[in-house]
Amino acid sequence: MSNPRLPDDAIRPTRVEVNLAQIARNYQSLAALAPGARVMAVVKANAYGHGMVATALELQRIGAHCLGVALLEEAEELRRAGVMLPILVFGGISEVQIPRFLQNDLTLTAPSIEKLDLIDRAAASLGVRARVHLKVDTGMERLGMHHDTAPRLLEASLKAMHVQIEGIYSHLACADEEDLSYTHLQLQRFAEVCAFYTRRGLPMPTRHIANSAALLRLPQSHLDMVRPGIALYGCEPGPACPLPAALRPALCWKSHVAYFKVVRANSPVSYGGTWSRGHDVRMVTVPVGYGDGYFRSLSNVGEVLIGGQRHGIAGRVCMDQVMINLERGSAYYRDEVVLLGSQGDQEIRAEEVASRAGSIAYEVLTNINSRVPRVHHHDGVPAQSV
Ligand SMILES: *Cc1c(COP(=O)(O)O)cnc(C)c1O
Image (cartoon, rainbow, N blue to C red; front, side):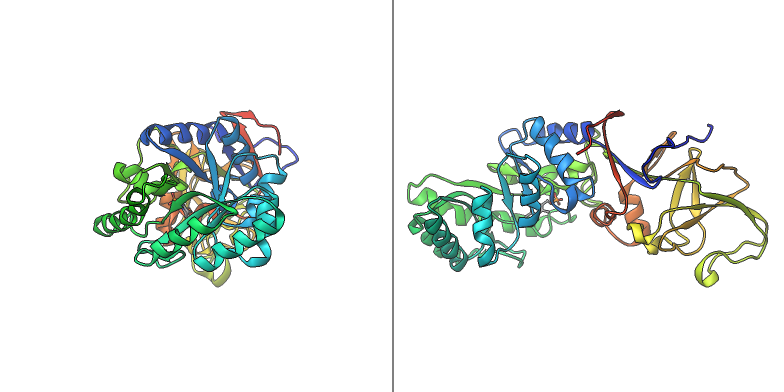
């Protein structure tokens, strides 16, 4: 094929193109896989690199139930951008932040009796009712009241008059592993904690524990709500969790050819001179580097697509540039270079980049930093910029 070219527009040639329509289709597919459950779309960490505000507005537009983020600051940014959906903040909270949650009608995570009490008092003094999800630790050892002592948190929550316990949740540590026995143990512990409500004849808050891996692999984990993150963006949680065909990546990371030259035999390329060949090769320089979040560990092992073909990274990835060996191939100034995504019939997936770099798809995506502009579209039709 002839080499595709990037449009010569005002945006930096190194860019991330995000197909919001694909995220919407992924959301619908995931919702169909968990028919009895609501879906909390996880948009933390800039929607796994896809642009948090644009992604959240798209999810709101298609009728998503609610959103999950890690930080208060992320939730506040969504509210400022006009997102009105319920937003649960997963992370720990500090006392001084509580009024900001309440002023923005955000849903708080209560991981302890002490924090629940602080939320209750802050809500009382503001004359509002706080929306709260209780957090139970069933084996992640991260955040939440241990499952064996959790009944005390549930008990305390019955007496907190200024909080509405809308949900109760836990997080799975090993749902993407081959061996699901620890996940079954966590599910069982969570069920025992939730039985508190049934035993007392109390209404059950919304129960949720399933991340993408559990959503895909364990229908019994779906409960009342599921919390997919990585699968929403069309990536596998891990090698043991293959994706249904309908879930496709929504992100393409592109750049272009900035410079072409012939590198003479035995001339070392890039810092440290770690790459050379015993014959002349054609080589291009591409304006992307670890300063954009392109892993330096891809030095000498990563591949990109140019002209619909795979070509290897030559030498070390620099902060702002990387050299690509074309061998005898050709490319011209401004030809499109795909770092992540497809070109012609070739595709480079985040999972592949992750395995070359010794990482996971989550990190490949969230590592693409703010120096890389995001361009959003719906199946090729430009989206309103946000
Ligand atoms: C990030 C996160 C998720 C989503 O996890 P995926 O593996 O990306 O699906 C769900 N729940 C919590 C609490 C999280 O922090």
